[in-house]
Length: 264
Length: 232
Image 1 (cartoon, chains in turn orange, yellow):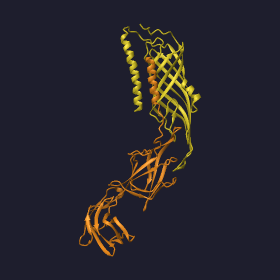
Image 2 (cartoon, rainbow over the protein chains, first blue to last red; image 1 turned 30 degrees about the horizontal axis):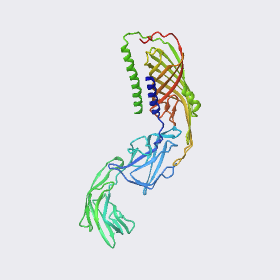
Image 3 (cartoon, each protein chain N blue to C red; image 1 turned 180 degrees about the horizontal axis):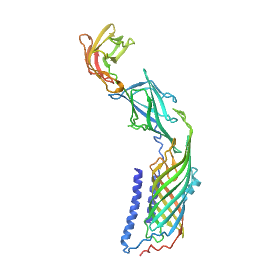
Image 4 (cartoon, chains in turn yellow, blue; image 1 turned 180 degrees about the vertical axis):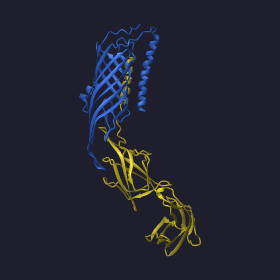
């Protein structure tokens, strides 16, 4: 009786523990890329398309994170990231292996030793050399792509949507190329070679002036970026400015933080 | 986690049997000198492998088993062959190879006059096999990714914790089963294809794997048993 009980007990364990393969998250072909700013936080990039020579267009979007699949036929995959102004390329190298899983699941592709063979970004860092499975785990991240910060873009906000016929500056010429645009939030480039920048706004029939003064400091935050001029202590020169201006943030950040509130 | 639980269960079963054995030894006041000379050799085969080969289109294999006793300890050895042939929606896989295992069992039924066994043991296993996979697939992003991949003469080794029963049915005919918890699989590095199924072990992508054999043995006595006293 005791022996029979023991026999049954062990048999139940055996049957209950026979493990069948799981068809969930078989392939780990996803490279998760975060865009970042050197010395700053997350970047937001605008992409019109992403292409690989062997694949169709992957997607187009504005994002701080993208996910790119690896080519299972090769041990390297080249991507071109098309933006509104510039294109960038990145080429991944990796080891890939195929494994048969089961008749139900078929085969799986296992990728490892991910590295960046070539790129034309400012800087790239491998965070995790094992690509992620899909659906993506919440903590998935493989690569961080960095760019040098832009140090001269001032974030200006009108208190209401305003029709602007034109904006010109004393050093960059025409800033608003399309007359009659309706603006609420926009960026104005500051002159890093001077302690002030002056802008003229054509609002309806009237010409209004804004002059901002600021302090400058030269710093090298990363070798790849070289020496850059950082701007702070922003203030409106009331002797020239005939707009109502409130300073919200008196230093320039990338990504931009609202610096001026203007009541036209 | 699953393998830890499995090992724990096997150890628990073994411990329970061992404790029972120690109790009965304590009650036995007569101290005896153990005779470690072998009394017989058992040869057998795995019935499940034979049945599976005829009923399962994906499997073909056989396994030979043998053991020899040294008092309550048994030296055990197995040799086998298995081949798999799987067909998935967009891939086909086949392998074949041989394997062997060696190890030792401890019998916890030392008072049994028929030398029936409830045992617990350890094994070391090795396999040499070849495998092939054919993929015919049209990927939505990368297009045609059809290919044929091969691995030849791949070596694999692993360990097993075993438990089971062996019971005398007729004069020289024995039957029994062995439950195996296989673990610590290591295979050769392979190029484009990862090993999928290791003969003697099973799926290569799991950290531990259960195995089950139902065996028929012939026991050839080599000398008369004289070391096991009759029950009082």
